[in-house]
Image (cartoon, rainbow, N blue to C red; front, side, top):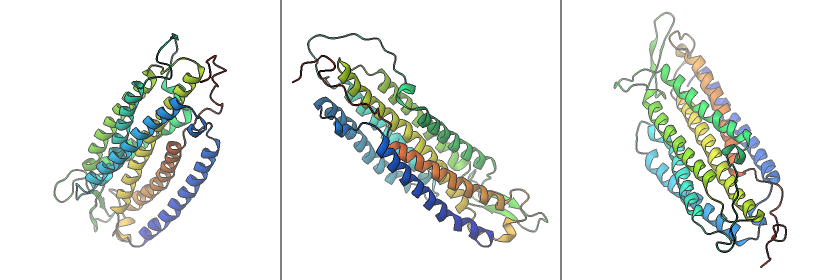
Length: 321
């Protein structure tokens, strides 16, 4: 880009650097204040649950990376690359659900002997703090808002592919045409389909987390059981926020990239669509969504866990082994 476009791209590295610095600071703060850690609980049941959860998570992450690698280069028009965050999230959430199913079938610490019956109501709101739920909702709103706005101003490109170009015309009619690639309908519809699939999968996993029976009686077992529930639920919700903001960020990147090569004569006199205004909107979205993505990543890496330690066997009336 020439002229004003140079200033648009000049601010991008600065914004990314600021977001990274803030993210590192937030992560350090969260890691030092997030409460109890699994490593602080020398309990065989806790370690088994931790192993099951971690195995499902990392296997899912590996499969998600493979899926991303396959889809990223599957389309020369960049559609696969734009869908990579949602594909990654969908595969990882599905793997987390499988891990939750396995955890539900794992025997508790005392599978035989006396059993106790308790009546309790578990909800997602009790496992995931309000702030994290708000960030996830904002992520979904962001990706919908960005994609809808981009689609509404888009037109077909020279090959008739709907929503791959951004039109413009000058006030005197001397300059008109379109810029691209632009993240319009051609990219928006697949994003919406994958987002819907992700939300359905997330709802399924959260339902598994909430409805899974207790793995054993006693205050200590309930504490450990809630610990794994909170970790899983908060990871899933944070992942929704991360991939939503990430998708919206990539959409803004594509929009800004589509303006590459436009000169001042195309930027300033726009009447149909002002490329100058579009460029600044894309840049602002890029910075805001980048910072939000960093925040979501911090939430993913550092779930909020209880600060009180696990009850000892003596506190719950059990005989020490």
